[in-house]
Length: 127
Ligand SMILES: [Zn+2]
Ligand SMILES: [Zn+2]
Image (cartoon, rainbow, N blue to C red; front, side):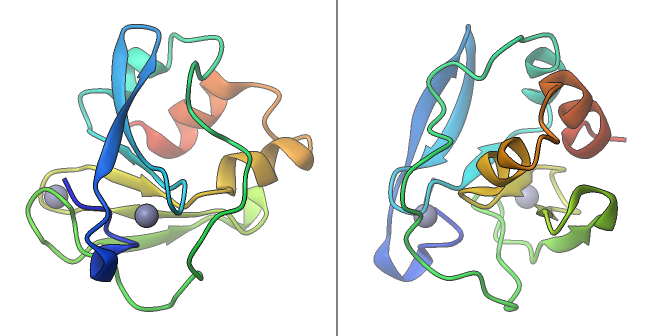
């Protein structure tokens, strides 16, 4: 799959293991793609394994809608001011979730990521 954020650079997403769960992350912008069926398994994890939470995220946040790396559907932005300015993109077609690079780290710095499970349940878990 190509990174929806680094689309023009044709950047491939790389598999990252969180325990035995596979997650896709872009090594350029550090954005993370969650397949809907991956999320319920991630909720039970106590840490995020090999996911890179820190580092310089390339690319700029844009208001342009992203397209789903699986099916090219335009994704919908979900904002929730309860957790600062964290922004998720959700594909209405396949239910996949895209989290921009640095979002998890920003939450952590603000002390809002004390409970990873809580985060996944609230923001990443499909309805
Ligand atoms: Zn990227
Ligand atoms: Zn999709």
